[in-house]
Length: 311
Image (cartoon, rainbow, N blue to C red; front, side, top):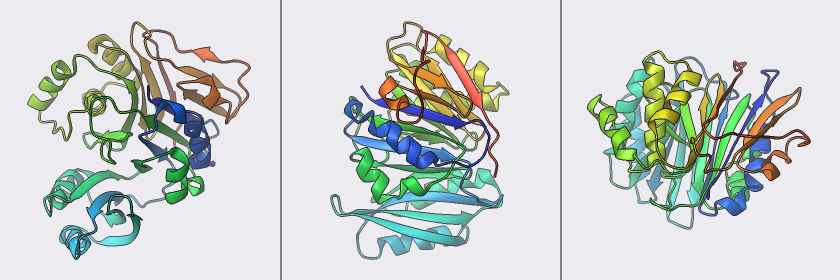
């Protein structure tokens, strides 16, 4: 199952992306009751050397202070928020930090991760806001005030877990730090996962999970790092990967979609003069636009819609 969705606003201005993506994912809730997540681009408004990080911390006495101390040893904390979760005794600590160089971010995150086994780095970003959690879409939207987040484009996911843990870290979107601010949401399976992962690890990619979605984002980022444009990278993924899949890639410039050659996972898209939208089912598109003219995503099809964010 799982449900995926993406939206791009054609005028390149900020819109109610969080609210629209919440509606789109809510319509796909039946496809994924376990967790949900958003990557909303363009409305963050950070300075060039600023980054947002989200860290899950067990609510042990003093543990959050250790995390803050570890961050401060590397970079100043400019602002922060705490989102408690009574269900599992954890909090999500969200902080805006100052970094002079993006490539410093992965070592920083790993350093924080070593503070305690009860500390999990969920993501780090510059040009997008990532929110993901276990539970239903409406509850996550309310908890993190997703409706208030503006953006130029966004992707989202509702998850039905079949192969890996149900927790915040394994919720989608996934990201990697090889290329700045690339995210992915995925419906399906990459059956030759280890064949794809092994050469990437030999090149130095560090995998944090055994989830095949993480393999996707590493693969695309590696291609972009080699100089491929997004459309070329997506076409190559369709050739190289086996299994039933459809996935959406988010970048600071826009979104891209790819579907397996047998067309074993659903996907529809539509556009008007204001937006381009894509989702697992038409019911999701209806939340944001008229669906008189809906296209099925064909087996093996790749589509890219890019729009330079206005930040």
